[in-house]
Image (tube, rainbow over all chains, first blue to last red; front, side, top):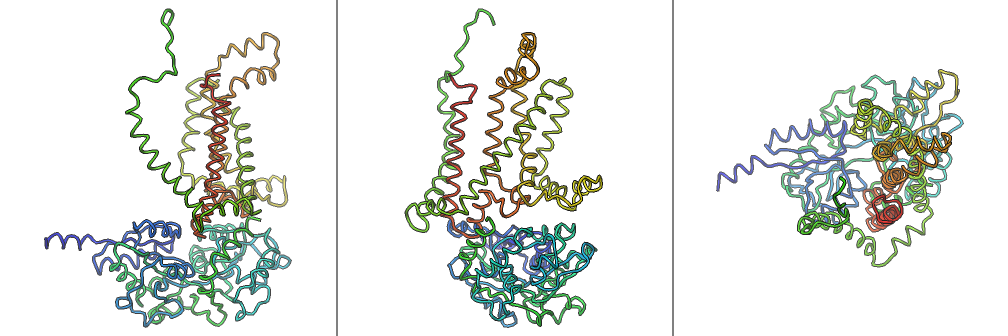
Length: 325
Length: 282
């Protein structure tokens, strides 16, 4: 019996689901590999994250995902809806985590900014502000925006229309859609990070609305990208454990490892996204720290993830109806 | 064979029933039951009743997506038939060796990863893509054409992907047509157009109908290509259902939309069986 128990421990696995692409590659190589070496627990990747799938798993009681990287507004809502396991903060040390990204059910995975990206080789001048990006006279032609309903584009539209950053919430949806109407015919939507990079690098859309890390990755491949951090809009991904996850204890340990100062620092270095552990910046080279969203705090606008969690469905329904019009 | 009595083709061999049972159980378990559950969700969530169907048919947005889907599927089917028919005819009358080579090319392209082919079209069609660059270099246009992220892109991409499904069933039918019927028509004084429209086309109608229905039905539920090559306003039903299920978690409404699509598809299939089936007794 003892032998059987031991071999079970040695074979223990957990499934970590994320969005694929360069982000998940970095998560696997830094978080999962390091974790496996330390604990002998094997981490199997799966993906992409799919909220419909999480719902189906939890409802059927057959949950094959143990830790999932999800958008912050979804994580907050799913926690409130009873879809998630409570996190065990005796295993996860939350004292040094950015309190903006900690709830009972979720902790930040990394945080990012939505910024204005521009292909310098394709145009004479680059838009600097959201107002510029929404100005078809000054900046004619196609521009690209995030397709899915999520914190970001609505905020950008309101900021472009002159709403002060501290008066964004509650979101004035009528005003936002009216502003978006003015550029609708010039919008090309991107639905994945890779697609946004392709659109910018090929100059199909010479400017647009991007995840900052995807621009960092483009710069590394030699594309002349200009990033404007003016009123950069921050939101976070969060790590969650779906209710009924089969390897709950291991999942808590994994989250503790992923959010530790060293793991967060290495991940940030590799991806250009910011760490959510407050001790991580001290562990990172200075030149890299300068390119991260947490160095742009002066011009930063925080998306209100709690507001979004509450109004997620209502905004989403309106968003997709407006898009399809 | 002269002398032997022709056997009735339609009579079922005796004792076949037990062999059907496993397949039947599989279909019930993996198709009928999930579909029934989807239907149940659509009338039970969030509250019992037909509210989801009322929302679906009462919303101008959803109706636009619905009509859009049929429009795209119709255009794709039409274009695929117009392009596919001559190709199939050519393959049918070619020497067998050559037609095998061309057929292999068609089938190989069909086996290439769908996502890769769709992305390839994206690269070809974009404003800075090969096609626009070529047309501009030739001086035919001075502004790049918008060929992608709209209905044009969806149609081009989907026609390309659907072509094999129209060509393959057609080749079989066209090969079975006795060439002497065409020669006979010509001898009786029919010109080329009459040979085509009054002999070849009617004879190949079952193949065209089967292929067109297959393409139309597949197009109705198509997801990847419209989602990547289309713009938000050329959205089709499959993408709407994915949004409702994955992002908005509104499974009741998603179920209703999926069920409407299923009913329409089955209806079309019934029409085809009833009116175009070459094997049915008339």
